Length: 180
Picture 1 (cartoon, rainbow, N blue to C red):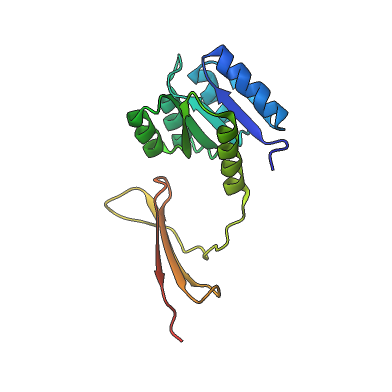
Picture 2: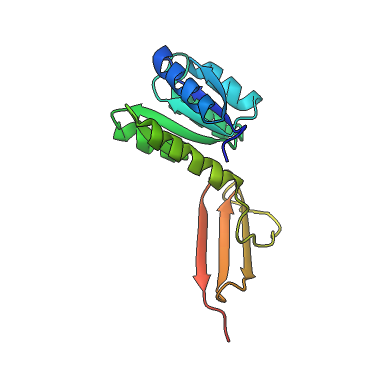
């Protein structure tokens, strides 16, 4: 599962970055380590990173700024933010900006590894249900395109409806029973 997965570690603490780099390389990852936010953003935008661990407090740009810029630029890599002592404000802001997960420093390496593996598994799994695409429409009051689709499935009979804002990351799903 992890062989060859590309991991970005962005942390200005040389000791933490070195420890994580050595640990994840032993686990089979290709690791890129950077010490500041601007280098992290460049690695995310130019490289083909699968998962990134971003420290919140870095020089140049904070991890949250990197996260926001990366998502606005269309970066699809899973992003895990790392924050000192579980700073709840940073965690909430990071999740709202599009982080996929978070970890508190100091962290347990086994737990961090497990969380990274889950991010990879979720990103690489084929969806169990992929509704047919409907034509995109634009609402006059909003420039965001919204896709909407409905389809029947044969898994216990329910129908699933889904709508998603193409740049907002919001997905709404509704289940309704099918008629016999």
